[in-house]
Length: 74
Image (cartoon, rainbow, N blue to C red; front, top):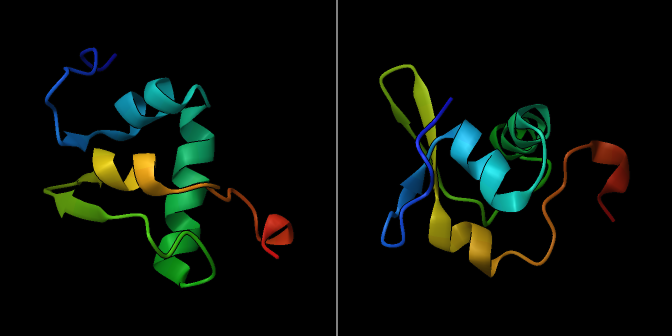
């Protein structure tokens, strides 16, 4: 289990992102996969840190919709 999200924390792990958004880790991984494939979630900011993927918290706050599957993208 990941540590709780701190107030001033800029980068979140997949587990922290899932908790922050109130969704499953699987959903977050799907959203990241869509971003990497270039099909959606273009404004989501991610970076690799070793084998971990980190997500910038401010990019989560700025997005209106986070897509987890291609069929939901307009």
